[in-house]
Amino acid sequence: MKKKMTIPDILKMKQNGQRITALTAYDFPFARLVDDGGVDVILVGDSVGVVVAGHATTLPVTMDEMLYHVRAVIRADPKALVVADMPFMSYHTGIEEACRNCGRMIKEGGAEAVKVEGGSNMAHVIRAVSSIDIPVMAHIGLTPQSVHRMGGYKVQGRSDQAERIMDDAFAVQHAGAFAVVLEGIPAALAAEITAELTIPTIGIGAGSSCDGQILVIHDILGLCEKYSPKFVKRYADLSPLISAAVTQYVAEVRNGEFPTEEHSFS
Image (cartoon, rainbow, N blue to C red; front, side, top):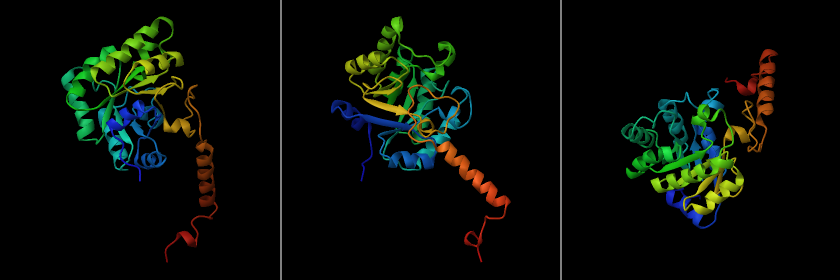
């Protein structure tokens, strides 16, 4: 039986050269399925706002919405480490509010760590939250909550930006982050950062040299048709299967084939 994954386990995986696997989940059934598949980390991402709620960006997602989804995932009793995304404006307006909201995610949501977007500009937040024993996963490079500043979901860290991304990586490590997500940066830069840092790097659109990888569950199952980033590999295409099942159900109800005696009580 797989044992519960912890922060020290994740750190040890980098030391031992073991690849870290991570996927998102936002509810009880997907948390069970993802955990049964053997992932090391479940991220309850604010990407729920896009792939589940239908928003164009992650910006509208609230603390209450994130707490709802974190609780649903925790009820599946996953062996994977559960990390909760801190939504936009939940940690931006001051240390006290950042600590309070991160504390809520642990105390009320049941998460085992939180994720904060930003590098050098958010190092003070990471330091403060880590200092009260709340584990923080950092997130640098393409940070979706900064979509307006970046002018869209564009690759970061090319040419003159590379030094800034490297500085961000060292800043979050020094501030106390136990791991860092590298999103949408050149593979060579991600490899350099991974080699330099002592904490694990988790890549998404950052090449194969990171210590681990993460993708959105809806993307790998073909359930999100809004976009298909280059870094996504579709491992299944469930959308047509679901549509076919619904179509068959509608047809059987309309022509009287369902329910049958088998599906009825006497």
